[in-house]
Image (cartoon, rainbow, N blue to C red; front, side, top):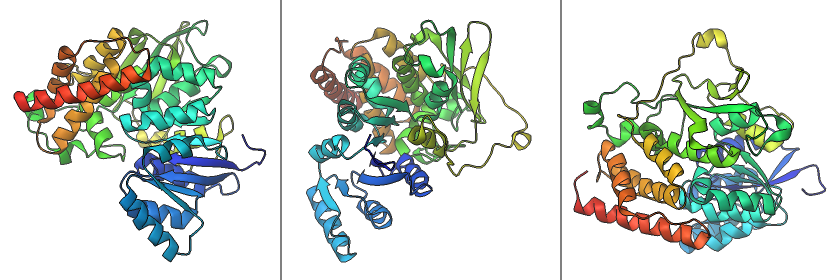
Length: 399
C-alpha cells in the first residue's frame, strides 16, 4: 500500500461489465480511490470515454493502430498527460506498476492469466473476477499468492459470498474450521426448465439473455450451459482448499442467496443481497471495511420466496465435465477451459449448436492426455493444444 489514504486502482478489462461496475463504485468514493490505469482489448471508444471521465495515468489497448487512434483522441480532448500503451507487455506493466495498490482482474478468459499473475507477483491486492486464471493454473497461482504476500479477494458473487461466510481469521483452507461443505448457488440460467429437445434449437441471442444478471456474451453463454458454475466449482476448490466433493451446486433461480457455507454443527451461513456486482466489488475495494456500493437494500417482502433445487446434469453436462476435470487434476482444468472458449465462440459464430458446446468440450478432453501442471509453460502449451484439438474436431465431426 502507498502511504497515502487514497488507493490507486488498475482495472484490467475496464470496458466489460465488471469494469464498468468497478468504475461506478470508484466514482462514488473519489476521496478514497484514484484510477491509475485502465485496459481494453478492442473497445477503443469505450476506453476513450473512461479516460475522459476519470483521467487515469495510463490506458492500454490491444493494437498499435487502436493506440494511435486513442492517442489522437486524447490529445484533441486536452488529455495529453495520459500515457497510451498497447499489447500484452503493457498489460503486464500496468499490472505490476509500483504506484498501484489494487488491481481489478476482470479480463475474460485465458487472456487474463498472465496480467493477473503479474499483479500477484508484485504483491498487490488482487480483486479476482477472472476465474479462468485459477481454473488454468490453480496450484501455481495460489502458491504465488502466498510466496509474494499478495492479498487475493474473490469478486465472483458466489466466491465472495463464501469468503464472507468463512471465519475471518482462518481463511485459506477448510481444515480446522469446522466447515462441512460449500454450497455454490446457481441461477440455472435462462433454460433451467427447457427440455433437451428445446435446447437443441437455442440461439446465441437467447443464450445471452440472462434473467438476473447483466453480463458479457461469453459468461452469459457459460451461465446458460452451467459451465460457468463448473468453472466456479474449480475456482472454489483452489480458493478455499476444498475437494470437488465438498462443493455442492444448488440451483437458486432468484439469485438472492449468493452462496452458503455449511458447518459441522449443522449451521448454514448464507450471504444475501440483490443481484448486483457492485456489492462484491465494493467489498473487495474496501475490505475489511464496508462502503456504499450504490446497491438498493434487499427487500425480502418484495422477493417473498426463495427456491432451491438440484442441477440437472443430464441436460447441462458441463457441470459434470468441470467436476471430472478438477478430480483428474493436472492440466485437465486448463484443457477444459480452452476447449470451452473455442466451443462458445463457435456457438456465437453460428458454427455449433448450444448442446454441441458440451459435446465438443467432452470430445476434446477425451482426446488430450492429462499432464502434471508443474509450470506455466506446460499449462500454456496444453491450453494451446486443447484449442487446436477443439478446432480440428469441430471441422471433422458433427456436434
